[in-house]
Image (cartoon, rainbow, N blue to C red; front, side):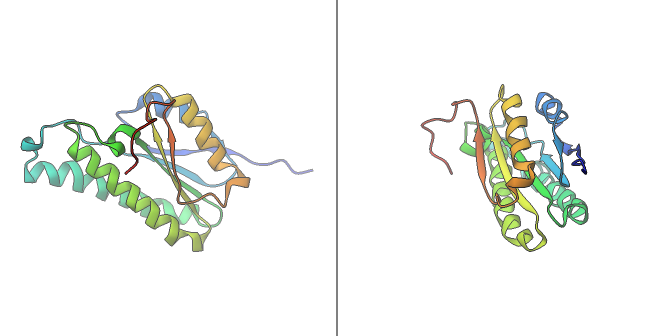
Length: 171
């Protein structure tokens, strides 16, 4: 009988989400997998968003995420998983987080498009939106999405927020 080989999951980014990255370090995968945890811009009043800040805070972050996806793709082809992890409050919107919301919205759209485009290469792409304090639950959700049986789950936006997003309208 042959055993199933598992490996750790490649995690990119997450400098501002150390607890989440630590929780993800416990997840193993039987398929090639990567979790991208982009570092979103900090809070600023709308008036403080200069052209330079928009270029670096939004454009550079989205460019870095896309470059990392391109770098990872050859290793994910044929049953791989690509997961984006985003703070739910950035995607749902909050005051003084216009730049973070723009990055989160861009990544959500990128993930949906990649799910459609990469299905031909048998790569499932999903987004997990999380709340602070839900890191263990996020790790369990990621493990479920990395299971061999979850290959058909793609293009989903999954909220793991311990109920903190209940009653909020989704974008």
